[in-house]
Image (cartoon, rainbow, N blue to C red):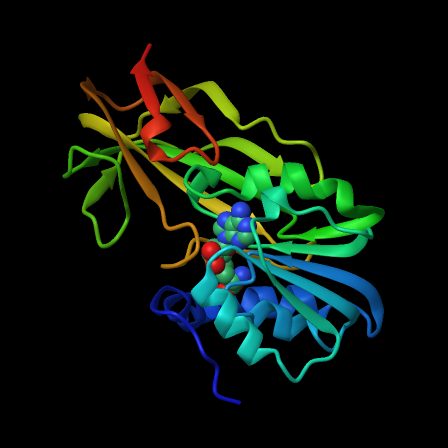
Length: 255
Ligand SMILES: C[S@@+](CC[C@H](N)C(=O)[O-])C[C@H]1O[C@@H](n2cnc3c(N)ncnc32)[C@H](O)[C@@H]1O
């Protein structure tokens, strides 16, 4: 089968670490489970992985080009229904055993994962699961070259502190999109600190964990006011953002 896809979704498919993590997590389902939802199905690869594990799959995609690809790619599967809609406006008739939702971005800031899951969770059976299951966010103080918010695409920076695990978000729980916390960094070298780096690790299920990959939550670098730091200093930074509302919502302040 030749998979039809958009340029963006092709880049997602080429990210083999991301794709194999989802394959492994979905593959752990036993055959003929009742119902799965693939939210933001793109060109339909994850629905394809679901096809021989679930009796019925409903796949929803907002982008009409990606939806057209998914329709074509999945046309031979009688058990998959592909819908062109905004999940946030879509009500399902039944409760699912599994929701797969990959609308992720580093710390869930730039895509709609939180809003979509807060809407869709009511269509999940009580013992149902969500893939991914959770994320863990880690922050480090850095000296970075660029003075604007950017993802780590070969960016140059030096890590200046121990890592701080600052948030664990479990997708089965209602998620408050407003994040506001003081982070304390233990400095481990003498330098000028001018940023923080955020890394998101994704827990797909109890057995599959995927670190950042080029197309799956690449580390995010955020400038802060410049400050001279010395080994063993404790530096407190207030970090604030709204998940799902974009990187424009990020605010930082050295305390
Ligand atoms: C990161 S891509 C993942 C695509 C596919 N699931 C995969 O893993 O290859 C996220 C997809 O979610 C879709 N999406 C974003 N917001 C959506 C919404 N509110 N309703 C439906 N689809 C949405 C995007 O158009 C995009 O195709």
